Length: 470
Image 1 (cartoon, rainbow, N blue to C red):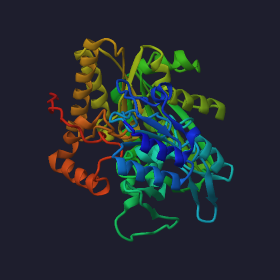
Image 2 (cartoon, one colour):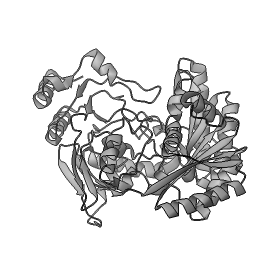
Image 3 (cartoon, rainbow, N blue to C red):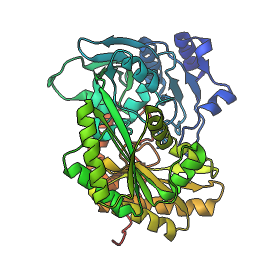
Image 4 (cartoon, rainbow, N blue to C red):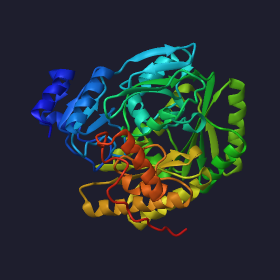
């Protein structure tokens, strides 16, 4: 609970109009996009500037009040669910693009900027910001930084951390620090910038970011390759990369996902094949055309039934939109949709997809699989109903098996969604006991009171590692 004194201090900082504690307001920010996680905060605050955040943190430090920084709440690991109570910080007033520096190819932004709005503004100047999470129409740059978000273009261009040059961060005691900057080279001391990116709000609160921009590609082409079996699609992915071609996008959808997405989007996706690869390449026109011809030949050599290049940008955009809408399409089918992400080396994609199918059959649940085949990041998505406790238990067991299988294949428990609270019990599977202790020591050094997004990353109890037979 927030004491009357702390409440008055918060209101003096943000104003009565930016302090919310009615039951309706608290309920609205009691959950994020992760099924099964919900807890009421004690208050919701909307700061207008870095100085507001500093003062809020100082009050929280004085009264030992938990702080949960929140973007648009699209994250899928329970990362912004206030399970320890305290306050939720919203950043929709801190939503300005402060500068686009065309000389240094950088932009300086506040955390509340919507990702797609930023991309559009940058592209007006012939520049390019590659990170493109599927939630980019509503997700914020601050949230992307907190979760180190990926996207369809991650294979060629990398993820959010690859474009964060500098940060302004409010620490747990209210201190404000600045890391990095507009420099192409900077090796002065520890790389705190990369430490904060992906830290899920557990080490500090990002209030400003300097982002790297690149020239906008001259052209792009999009193709759809169809397959009658998963192994052929996976072999095509490996062959494309082995031939030193790195597409912008190399996405995988299985047959159940294709059916659902086509029912949702109505763009003529084939539903009578076992798998498709959505492939896109960008760059100089002559290079794109040459590489797309090579990609088509490689796909056909490894069993593609056909490889069709989009006839227009409108058709290409429809294909991209269909892939981005996979979660929305699947969510129409059952009351609860659990979208996970397990990542394996790309050479193991076919084994992982087949394992997911076997695990779904073992536990008698419905799992559709799609994802970023080019970088091995798969999204097994379970369609269920959280009111059915017996089925939800089977779902949990199935995902435990999926995470275990990913690790056995040399992968990890998350490629882009983060750990949050949902995957915290499995983090030790990946890092080991010593790795967890090292991370906990970092957390204590930055946040000795444990007020910054407490309960995330580190679970009270670790799940027992299961063994999956190959």
